[in-house]
Length: 78
Image (cartoon, rainbow, N blue to C red; front, side, top):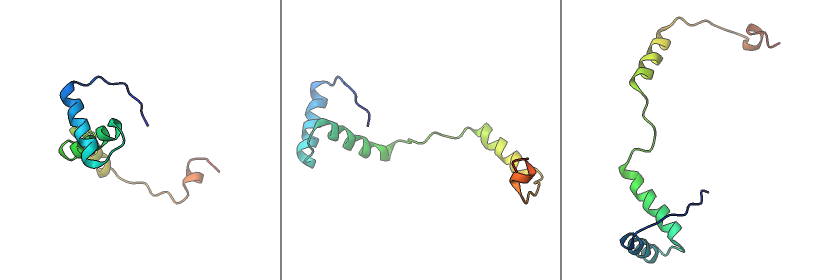
């Protein structure tokens, strides 16, 4: 869990208090978490994969594969 000290304006404070009352939350921290969970539906949280990386992966997939029966033996780990 991350702890943070934040400054909020009066309007935001009112919104957090309404959320606390509406959902029976204990504190403003829970209200902020609730807001973040609701907002998460509208934003993309996962990082995007760069197109160059996708192209690099496609080239690697096209390469000839080498069959290895015993990885440890092949790479001197035994």
